[in-house]
Length: 239
Image (cartoon, rainbow, N blue to C red):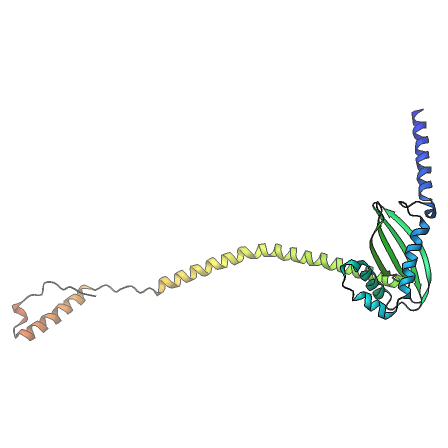
């Protein structure tokens, strides 16, 4: 019995979910605004933008008043998005999407070369206008090109990171080799320094005898005596 009740409840929830998904957006109340009111507001803005001359657009774009910043941004985006779209044809589909605390209204504006989407973004709980964007609709070829470019950029970033990681790992192998080479160079420098140090030669006994004989001969010559009359007992060297 419990299983039957659970099955019935599940079926009821599925039916309610399908009913909600298939709800007519033109009959939904959007926090006090109807579908027709929102559509009229967005389409009126679109008509106003279409009716603007080039001089008026430049005048709005040059307006630096912070109070009209959203209007200035909207006109600037409109001018950029409609630069190469050709002649105006008609107003296309209008859609409303509610996602969490945001309500988005999109109006398609059809031109000869490509369409443009005018988007109004509202904060749902107070229905204040947060932003207005104007974006050209991309062709299938442009979407494929952008997708390919994004893929190449992603692959490039991945390969760059992999190369950096490989270099870092390779560096761990080089560092010990460089350290050993540095130690070998230091040892070679120390050895060369030791070899360049000159030792003071030792004075041999033979050298001392020759020196004594020379000194004795000099003393005898200066005093007019013979070397047999005196004896040299010690020699002190002063450096």
